[in-house]
Length: 257
Image (cartoon, rainbow, N blue to C red):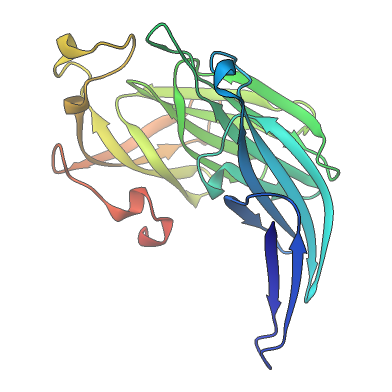
């Protein structure tokens, strides 16, 4: 079960709702709603199924100390983190990865779903960047920015103006990957992640399409210009240090500022 506790910060009074929804792993909170999620895995004998894992989403309305369960939904795959989710007007947007390996090949796929106020799928894009996994996502208004990674860093610009028909507007493939995306202004996104030189120890790779761990280099800071949504560009790049260099901002967005 999950406890949702409302605390009056003036007098310390509390109200508590206990909801039989199972585990809660990653949450998203808007002004009016709380979304709790958890990953539901299939039985081990279904491991080669592309639909082996699902994200269960529970929606609650919040109004001061009043918390009410509204509805549940589910989408294939698992979440990366809280930035994989977003609420815009009456729609909930979520990006997932379905992890899968068959015959030593990474057959993972990535997806983006738009759910209506009743948590029913309204629109979707599935099968984005086969063989790669989501490394960062950022929803900003009617756009989503998604970075996947296997050996190069595709930045996808996704249009969400029509909730029933999300579309990939453009993409950019460059070496490396971003683990955190931060909006700079309307037309620029900052990426924080790692530089990658896939040629390093390429002869040691045993999994098709992968890179050897020594190919991952220093911390990479990049500014992406997305003013032309069909042709995003990497406008600036700075690489700090070399292999082994880390930044807290890669895993803790509060460290970014």
